[in-house]
Image (tube, rainbow, N blue to C red):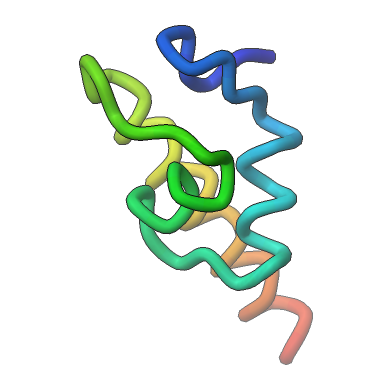
Length: 61
């Protein structure tokens, strides 16, 4: 699934950037060698970041 249509960033790219240490949408864009354009995807990126944080928190319990 595409998260960012402007830059062609897919969900797997976002998750790979998060796995590599990205904690904010700006870091995800940097990891994907792109820049935000319309910024509609930023909310989706934040949701994916939150999902990842929750998964780590549950795994730590």
